[in-house]
Image (cartoon, each protein chain N blue to C red):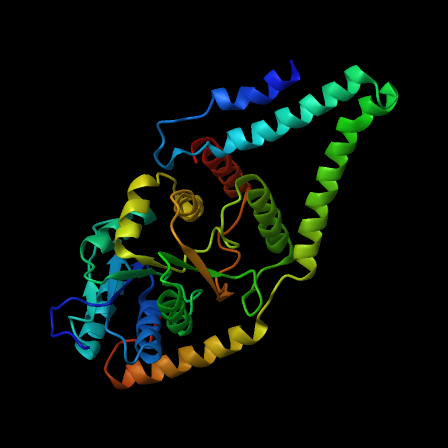
Length: 242
Length: 110
């Protein structure tokens, strides 16, 4: 099943980075460790990190091969939605996985995403933290309260068809991701919510797998009043347009 | 007349959207209008004493609030946490650094 160098891959894993010098090395190691028999490629979309993330990626290419790790850099920070689009342009896989580089998404869950997709033929497999065997580490009470409140509000008003709306660890069929990105306009993590709500409304088949989420950078501009306002605006926007 | 109220949301029905579905906000408006219609009907026919009927919307708001609080509280009480995952991740990081350092990847400094 292994394709020749430069051939099409089954899975493309898109990892947007900004100043993730150390994390990107660890995540690449862990992806290769947990997907030993899978025909995949990793696409790193780096937004001009000043910390030398791209140098590390080049060193990783020497270890794992330039055909398995693709560096598709952009000159500066240009936003998450366009980062996915940029990565997608260079992706050869039939399926595309999107994950964060900060190690809050652990690559050990990748096999369960792939298995779930194969078993159900789903268009989207989304990682959820809020079910049995899932979970979050590193959140204080306030953060948990906000998260639960936001979730109850969204589940009641939007009926979004997924239990974890703002998580971004997901596997998509390639054309489904293309379709969704082109119809989503939000920024930040409202973007993640818009993606999954639109997927539900468009009638795509969505499945969930439990994931754990270890938040190691809590406290650094993670959730302030302005994020809550952005979230509420996003909710109203989705109510009116989906 | 009350039947007319129920029909209002369907005037907003958007035929042009693909998959021919109502915007979600209109589903909510439809539910609210239906509830209002029932309420007004109760007020008009006076099957229940009027003084009770007048209070029904307040009860409804209170019930909704309780539902929200209960759901949030329930979610908080049974919030799934995974402290062991943080420890496992630290082990993975050490393992990855060792392997990559041997392969000549510069993971020494932050």
